[in-house]
Image (tube, rainbow, N blue to C red):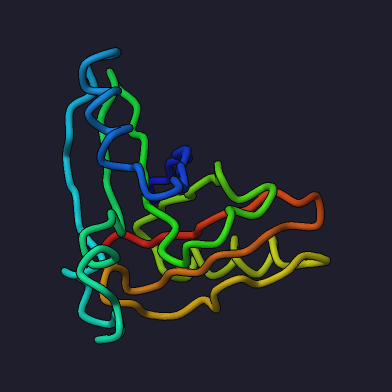
Length: 138
């Protein structure tokens, strides 16, 4: 089973600008960008401005990945949420074990379940206030 730990940056509507900056400043290579408008489960009430925000982006910097998304709510980003850690596995059962362990004494932000982008995904803040996204690759 493979497992990786990747920093995930939550941006305040300027993820595209940050991505372009990191491309120029440190030679980041864009691997993927998906807007909220491209996500099948997003509400039809999203304005065109919100639909153009980044729902998920993945960059490669050397041998390391860096991921981004924009905060779609327009509200300030909560303390402890601007940088989260994404734990990626290729085993849904292992991902579930990790998620369940991290939620002990913590708070579930998004239940562990199948999504349009992962067969098993959840978002949890542990008892120390660190937020983890547990992501399973297909």
